[in-house]
Length: 201
Image (cartoon, rainbow, N blue to C red; front, top):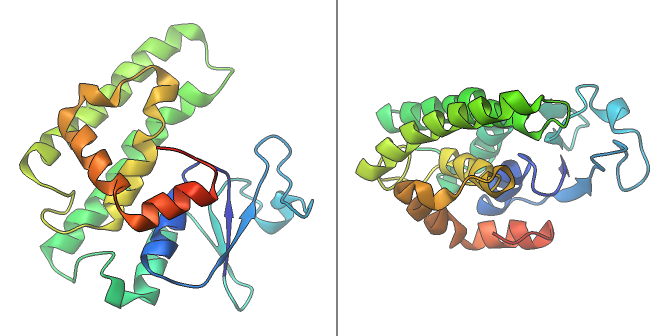
């Protein structure tokens, strides 16, 4: 398998997942500015959507959309228990995967866009903060998003929380989120993925 990624982007989540699952894969970096891969291929020819992550399977199929890739990795390595077994814990993990993707991750988009008018940045950060407040409240009561079990939802939350410093938002504003972030950061697969992307926490 090949994972197309950009360092520090949301593709970090499936990168971590693949390492947690101990599956064989290779990394192909995509340049953010040029949309060219390491081998100077036009990434749009590989993935017309133009964004990462994309996972190229052994048979040549291309899988896109982060939550789907995470669930695919879980299905390939059920022994790694990257999502809870069928039941309410699993539905909670999927519920959080959806919330992070549609509410937290999406809220960063206008903040990263250089064309966003200055007048929209402050309300944009406030909107993001309210979404993070919801995760904070949940994590005050639970170690992980699905309850007592680590899951790929935690990996996704860790990934987006790395971006807060770029928006002048201190993770320490949310003590439970900070505790959760530090907990996930201690996992060997997370440290390995960060190192391979040339990143620090």
